[in-house]
Length: 197
Image: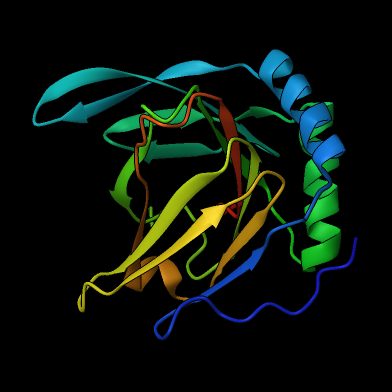
């Protein structure tokens, strides 16, 4: 497919572009099955208020090199790409005219699993680089919140959609994936990134 022009979702201090039908539903179903079975999924362990908590959500960290990625006081070491990730990375890079060297994957089993407010602004990520977020599976609400004005922007991340977060978005906006007990089916999210090499 060709990416059509998308208006910036953010009113100021960042650029976020959304493409609801980036891959077809058939492709989405195919890749969901492959990723669910072929990714080295691990339960995430985060540190909150001095306590280690194992999340129901599962994660995986892949890359072109053994990049270290630290968040919530835990460090992950990237493992080599598999075929499905290379395929998706190639499709996204071709359409976005961007290159990515790593990918953080999240597997949300249902709407009881989400993500609190955060920014992808770790020091190991290339500053102001694009993050390409591909959603496969259940449709989920997604929110941006400006760090100073507290203004919120909301959208639904559809099955097969791509969200590009560009330029200084991570410096000025948080984002979150709210929980919802109504959602019973799983979602896989792939966030392709550029780590400092």
